[in-house]
Image (cartoon, rainbow, N blue to C red):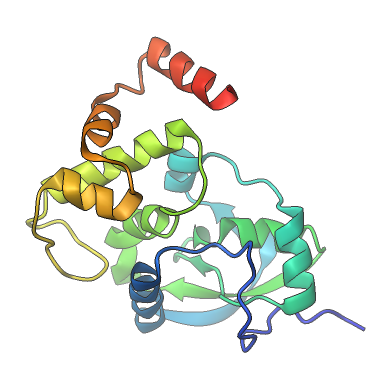
Length: 202
């Protein structure tokens, strides 16, 4: 029997599903639903977004996620932009590719959502396990976001109040002094890159 991986009515949440805190997850989902259309595309036509590669690098296959999708179906549709670049759901798409699926249903963001692509990419990944380098890049993004609150597009259309370091802590759980230190690192310096890699490698 052919596996139906597009079972979006499945209410069970997989323990390997990409998640963010409940409130932010709901905000992101609602924004996507309100500003996108569903479509079926060739899975090989999809590519990783340059900003995804900047923050998180190449996405590998998660065997547990692939097995979960095979058994339970795809709970949330991946999100792409008008250029077939993946905004949300890189791990799901790589897992589905490993199941030899040729076509996939996705949500395609409306063209006027282009300015929010970076926000969607980073903020949908905030609570996932990641390397120290990835955390540094996220914190830098958030410091820039909260330091330039006027005029910068946000997913929820609100301008949060409070100190930048406190807002970063709410998003990441990284305390103020440590967050300040991470935000100040120059990740273009070879010495810094080397130290971060040593930490990640244990």
